[in-house]
Image (cartoon, rainbow, N blue to C red; front, side, top):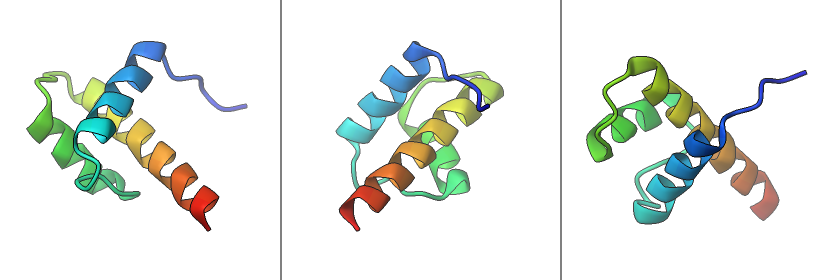
Length: 66
């Protein structure tokens, strides 16, 4: 079974993607840098969790379009 992300992480990730839709893609490393740039998150683990959620949601959106 996979791990369940907390709701506030999902809200932050969705908010960033809605605000900056062209900046994020399916690559985790790119999203990690962009999350650091566009938010005031200080914790490295929190930043990585948000970037991972964004990568996952972008991958899901990409497969739905295809």
